[in-house]
Every structure is written in C-alpha cells, then in structure tokens.
Image (cartoon, rainbow, N blue to C red; front, top):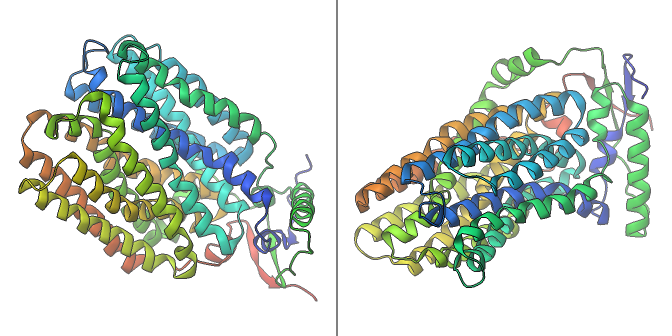
Length: 485
C-alpha cells in the first residue's frame, strides 16, 4: 500500500461520473443498499411486536417501556454513526461497511434471546450502533461510486428500499404473531432472525465491492485508485458492449499532506458551510420526527384507537410500505430531472398538508383503520421521497474527506432531536387513550414537515448533475483544471 504525500493530478472522479449505468452499478446498489432494508425490517418488526411485548406472551412491557426500547435503538444508532462515521473517513469505506454489517448481525441475533426490558433495550442499542455505522459508511460509498447524472435517482431509490424491509417485516409478522404457526412467545423472538439471515447473505456480496477510489485519492493512494477505476471501466465496457463516453477535459489536483482531522470536520460544518449544515439538520430532524413518531408505535396506535387485533397489525403496515417504496422509486428520477430544491420542498410540504387532513378527519370521526391506511399510504408516497432526499443532500454537499463524519453528525443530531424524543412521547400519549392527544402529536409532525420544506426553499443546494467535487471541493484538493487535450 503505497501512500504519497506529494501533490498529484487525476481525472478519476470525472471518469467515474461519466460511466453509463451497468450491471456493476446494480451490484453496488444491492450490496450497499441492504442497509436500509435491514433498518426498515428492524423498525417494523419491533413496531409489530410491541403489543406482544406488552403482554404476558412477551416481556410485559408498559407503554412507556415500548417507547424507551425504541429510544434505546435510536441512541445506539447515534453512537454508532458518530463512532463508525469518523472511522470510515479515516480508515476507508469498505473496511467499515464490512465491520458494521457484521456487528449488526451479531447484535440483532442477541435481541432474540432477551429475557427482560433491560436486556432487550441493551441488545437493541447495540444493533442500532451497527445500523448507525452503516448509514455513515454506506451513504458515503454509494455517492462516491454512482455517476453524477444518476446519483439522485439511485440514492433516493436506495434510501427508499427501507420500505422493502418494512414490507418483509410486515408480511413475516403475520404468521409469526397470529398464533397459528408459532406461539407468540416464540414468534417475536424468531422475527429478529430475519435480519440476521439477510445480513449473512449480503456480507459475502460486499466483500467483492471495491474501496472508494475518491477516498483513496484523498489519502495519497492514487495508484490503487487508478487500478480500481480501470477495472470498473473494463467491467462496464464488457457489460454494456460499447466503448465508454469521453471524459470531460478536467483534472483535479490533490495534496494529501493537508490535515483533515476532527477539528477540520467541525470547522467545515460550522464555519465553511453553516447554511448547508442548517439545511441538512432541518431536513433530518423534521423527517425523523414524523417517521419515528408514527412507525415506532404504529402497532399501538392501530390496536388502541382503531380496534385492530395485534396479530393483524402487519396487514395495515403493508400498504404503508408499498406507498413509501413507490414514492422513492417513482419520484426519484425527478430529483435529477427537475432539481433538488423543487422536489424536496414539494414533497415535504405536501406530505405535511396531507397529515393535517388526516388529523381533521380523525377528530371528526371520519377515519377507520382502512381509510387511515389509504390516506397515509398517499401521504408517505411523497414523504418517503423527501426523507430519502434528506440523506441524499447530506451525503453530497460536504467535502469528501469529512463526508462520513458529516453524515454521522447530522444523522446523530437529527435522530436525537427528531427521533429519540418522539417514540416515548408517542408512547405516553397513546397510553392516555385520548384522541386529542394523539392528534396533537400528529400535528407536531405535520408542522415540522412543512417547516422543513420551507427551509429547503431558502437554503437548498442545486446539486443535480454535478460531480461531488464541484458541489464541495475536497479539503485536500489543490483546484480544478482543464486537462491538456
């Protein structure tokens, strides 16, 4: 591993961005995108089994404890994101996305053997650390490997795959919890094995993925980056059956001797890009509150206010999952074609207004479990694309050397304020069995989503179609220059 501290020039970032979409990119999407499927599976499984956990068939949780268990998972995710995020910037994307997946695999399996609230919360927190670490390492790697013209489409679709995990979890929860095939006391434990099985399958696929060439450049390893990119180009050439398009006549100079440690990260976020930091915090906090508030306690909402049997909760989550995934899949293209600011603001504001409509109908006795499901499926069609774009935004508007740490920082703050606070609040409000209290919490989620859309209008960044280096120059970059023809 030859590490250089001397300046060098390269066109590698622009060679990656000009590649046509090929099977190789699908390998990246599948191998790295599994993160969101696993997280969606975890959240849905816990949401579906909450009524069982609160019964004698489970661990006799109180309503407050179900919320606190969700908070434990989120706090673990925050710790994992911060710790593993800084490690991903220092030691590389590949090493960390293998470690974090293995960590998650072990800890989610341990959750199946929990014997009381304390052990359950501890294992959930440890599994959350693995998922949090995944978010920072994976978002960085994906954006650094996907071509610029397709980055928005691919990233939003990948983030939207969270709902594939939700769909799997909802479908699996029915036979596991309805008592026909397994006693509920065993079924909720088996549910956690699903994530472990998926993780084992993908761990082998990830081993074949390369280190990010962009990360290698900033760490003085241009020869390794060149070898990897040449291999990718050969593979794409072979898969598409045609010669690659020409590279833009640009090169970039890197100076690996420049320091890019913890202090550089803080300075870049606060002093260099304060408006961008405010933007991504607003987007992350608002969407995190809405989603975590609703879905971590969805089972309790349906059983308490709409008379749904605990074993049938998964049936009502399935349409939510489909609507969310279709939103990211269908609307993702427009974040590249129409633009980031227009699409993000529209999705946030529209989903907030639809939540307001659901509150009005709920308080006027115009909703039952079926109509709520239909209305929220439409609402989350738009909210899903907007929330996915929040992760896209934070992963593309900061310099490469601090990208994973920036993702971790924003994810941590957004999750702590918008996520960890919401589940216990909702758990307590649901415990009152007062419709007005539930409507109050929904209203807070709606107001925050609308506010997030307004912030995007004012502070949004037009990043569509641009190389990452053009959106935010690397800290080790010496400048962009025209190549000699």
